[in-house]
Image 1 (cartoon, rainbow, N blue to C red):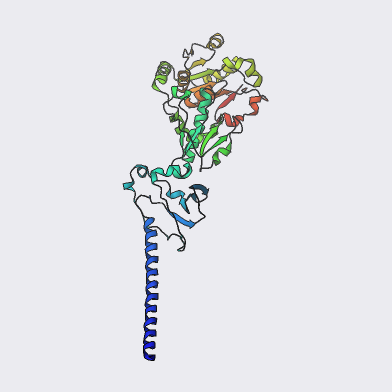
Image 2 (image 1 turned 120 degrees about the horizontal axis):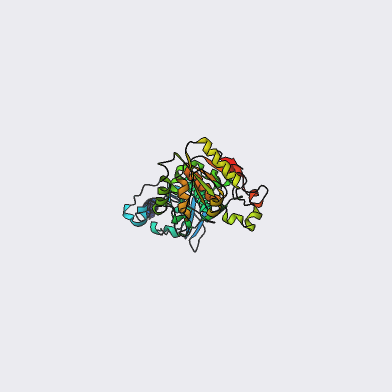
Length: 403
């Protein structure tokens, strides 16, 4: 009887050990299968090769999104997926053809506790735009400007925009309805609506604001202001000249007009006389001035003395005043162009330029690229517009001021 009891006890102990061993082996198998499943989840073909780390969080009823310095966090169910900036910018092909997406083995094992339960939802690449912000998802950023004023003002604004876009490696655009499209070939227009956008406004209309050099590249930008300073774009002169290439219908007649005098004269000097609206009481009160006849005669004599066989081409918004007052020794001609683009193109085809007041003449002189003489009495010292202007920022240092 004792022997039977001992034998039964040994048999029971042997079965218990086998049972515990089976449970242990089963546990090991489950752990291995779980780890293998997690690693394969990270490599499924429907998900692009995004580097992600997972951490346990509180249960969330809806997907949420937040930002930190490392990228964008998308909360999906009970999991937070952290997508780094360098891995959330897919090539265009990934948006439309997922069969071209290649996957790679993760660099590290997901940080998931074994005793937790997780619900995962994976978003296809083409749907990520609904979850990720512009700054992390799109490879390109955009910058635009709110165009104000007429042709000369718009040219300053576009020049500042183009130079800023190049410095930031952004895509620049302006709204389709603008005067620049009538005269130039290159302005890029679009009606897109920017998200993740900030705005920048200059402090003074004709004084360089260095804060534009410190725009946060995590955002799209809209610029506000006039930006009337050569300092905004002097490093990108070739880019700006290409941006202001006149359309054929604007430049052809102007080119033929100027070239018609080159066979007989060695040096062609353009003169732009701004009067018109600058003679109104409202403009004069805030500081706008018109150059006197003495300034024009002085500047013409400067070029007569400096160059042989000089010929002057005169354009103005008050051509009658010019014809009645400016006298030449058979070395002057008055332009009959009334189209702003053709007038500016004509100035740009001259060898040198004399300007009086205003941004229109400024750009005609800048595009010509030769010597420039400007009227030092614009604007009136101490006036409203004079207080918003720095002459050293407005007039390039090589230009010559006279009064």
